[in-house]
Length: 168
Image (cartoon, rainbow, N blue to C red; front, side):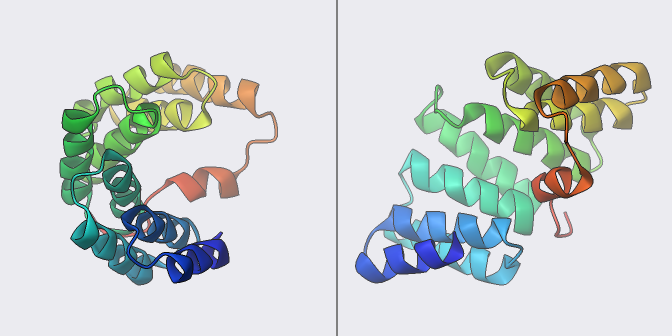
């Protein structure tokens, strides 16, 4: 994915979404500094595209600051309340609040993510993490069971790919 992003940027260097998705691919591959740089380049080209902002929100959720990520996610929802990536962004928001030490603020986001897209693992995993952090272990186990029902071979590597690797 990183090489495909590099090629997309090379073919269309003035396209903000190419830069944003390149940053997204770098963030998923754990190239944090490069991911943020690509995301910032995308925003310098077009800071009003909900799709560019959504990709940047994911970059920041994984490799940047949780506060800034939540601010960008709020901007996406202001621009496009029914954005197709809303469920994943809500999952990121929940996990960002967890990183910031306020998991109770993320609980409603995680629950909405599961309601919007019950077939998506990220909502179930985020919900389980937040529920565990607010001392609702039984509910957390139920949320995790929902994820395992969707992906019986759910493993640590998959879950780790969703979790930020930067400090809040």
